[in-house]
Length: 321
Ligand code: DGY
Image (tube, rainbow, N blue to C red):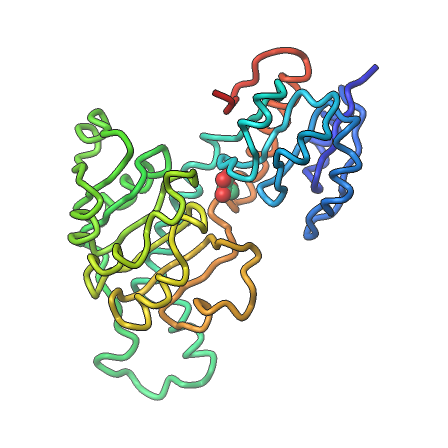
C-alpha cells in the first residue's frame, strides 16, 4: 500500500506527478488560499506524510492528532511554523529546504535595501501621480549605498550571500551572530561586533537571523535609540524579530530614517497596519525567495525530503535535533 500524503497547496504539476507515483496523494489544490485548519485536522490522523508551507501552523495540538505521521516536509528554510520539539517527541521527522533559496533571498534583500535607500517606490508613485513638475536639487533624495557601513544580524548562508553583493558597493561590513565565524571573517573581510556597536555604527542594518525564542522581539525600543538617525533597517527574515510598534515609533520620531520590510508579525499584514501608513517604509509581501526557478527548486527539495523519509531513509535536510 502506498503511504498517504497530504499537500497543503498547489505545487508544480511534474512534482505532483512524481509524488503520485509513490504516494497516495490528497491535496488542497489552491494557489492563493491557505488550507483551512479544520481540513488539516481532519487529514492529520490518517496520513504518513505532510507537505506544508510556512502558512500552516503545525503545533503540538495538531501533531497530537497524528497516528501514523512520519514526516512533515516544510517548503521553506525557516520552520518556526512547526513545533519541532513536539514532532520529535512523537518520532516525526521535520525537514526544510536550505541552500536553494540563498542567492535569491540575498538578491531580494539587497534590492529592498536599494529601493528603501533611494526611495524607488515613492519616486515611482510620485511620477505616476502626476506630481513631477520639475527637476529639483533635493527632490526625492535618499541615502548613499556605496562606501557605507552595513550591519548584518545573523551570519548564515543568506548573510554571507548578502556580503558578496555588498562588497560590489564597497560597503564596510559588520556582523553579529550567536557564534563568531572566523572562517567567514577571513574569507569575506567582515568584522564581528557586539550588537550595540553594530547598531551604533551601521548605516544599513539587515536582519538575517532565524526566528527562535532567542531572537523573538530582538530589536526593540532601546535598540532603535542606538541607531543613527540616518539608519535604514531591512528585515527579510521573520516578522517577530523586530518589534513593529517600536519600529513605527522610531520612524515617526525620526530616530531612524527608513525601513524595508518583507516580513510581518501577522501575515498577510492587515491593510490598516500602522507601518503601511509611512512613505518611509517599503513593504513587500514576503517574497524573499520568490523567483520562479527558486520556488520550483524549493518544492523539489521538499518533495525529495518527503519521499526519502517515507522510504525510511534519512532525508537530506532534517531539522530535528
Ligand atoms: C523561508 O524559506 O523560510 C522563506 O521565508 C520563504 O522562502
